[in-house]
Length: 268
Image (cartoon, rainbow, N blue to C red; front, top):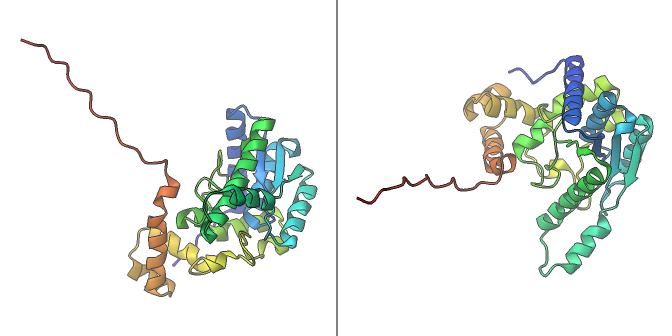
């Protein structure tokens, strides 16, 4: 079974052209990128700088109360490497103030999603204030799995790397010269203490990408995917379940179709 691969040079050219087209088409002064210190935001930021130049990219660091200091250092290092303007807005205090003012005690999930949505609010505040648009950092693996917060980190004006699986993003990062300390770092949303993506996903991305490609893109049966990939059929079914359950995250809010227009009648 073939793993999803890319021509990194071709993808770099495609994505930078896409970024320029979207930004110029919107009449925007540039982009705002949420910079976490992780691989997805590092690749997105690098591509935006290559496409637009450093003056048109604004990096926003939004550490939570649980963000690892290493992630903050990596994010600051990237911003300095690119020579872009960077702002830091800690969302820990914002989340605490919201929770204290709410009339209901939030669950662990509610508190985690609140932080993701606060980050979205911060990004759009800076985008509106500076005449820019928001470049999202989501990749195909996380989008197809529904591993993002609706109207949180899933909210953006455009998504430069959403067509790439996580393992493809890693390959592109290496081509772009992103340091191995960032490319090999375990994904860490940092929404609660010691939070890692592996805490919530059924397998590593090398396996998940293979299953996603075969079961979701190529529409092979779970049994066929399990046999060829050498993974339990239960894992394949879980990935398919996650994809179906999160379908609402990848579409506009549902609504009723308007009633057909009633034909005018003429009294006899």
